[in-house]
Length: 114
Length: 109
Image 1 (spheres, helix red, strand yellow):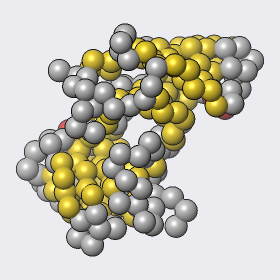
Image 2 (spheres, helix red, strand yellow; image 1 turned 180 degrees about the vertical axis):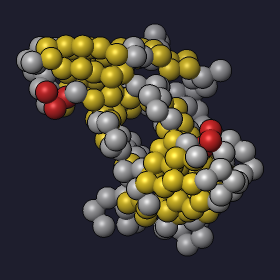
Image 3 (cartoon, chains in turn blue, red; image 1 turned 45 degrees about the horizontal axis):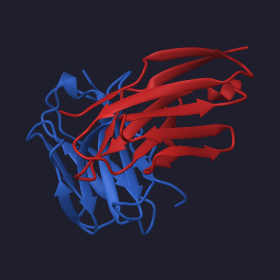
Image 4 (spheres, one colour; image 1 turned 60 degrees about the vertical axis):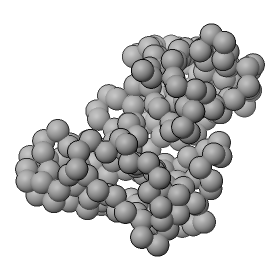
């Protein structure tokens, strides 16, 4: 595709429910990043993949958050036992290499936990 | 710790010039980015500075002073479509990118 895509665009979950958010990066992009953006804030780093390897997960807020990229392309961010504080926009970004200038962002998934 | 500061909101008039400042304290420095984000949309890349000085790209320019931990984004000939949030972001020593909270720019006709 032409850009990074994410699905679903909107997700409403009941507290305690598990959710899975999908990211399709730009074809050929080696690096993939997940960010969490609360309302009125900048994106906050969650985790980073280079191909299928998760090189940095220091931003994941708790062990309820898990991300994978098993074949080095599509990535899934899973949140178990969602809490209200998990409500945010989850942004995925990809770049050709980890140290290139530009990360290209997807449209995000807006998660609302009731 | 790591910190990126930028004004929360700014207002400017259509056709005018506005400068959005950003100061940072980070663990190492491997470049500074400016992104534009319209409400409900993804951030889009505007500029990248790794050396001191001014980078000009059309109506937008970005300046960096590494010794001062300071950058600004300059927008000229403002248009209504420039109403958006502008995010300053720094890549640290570990290549992780840290974003500021963003500056909401309001353009008045």
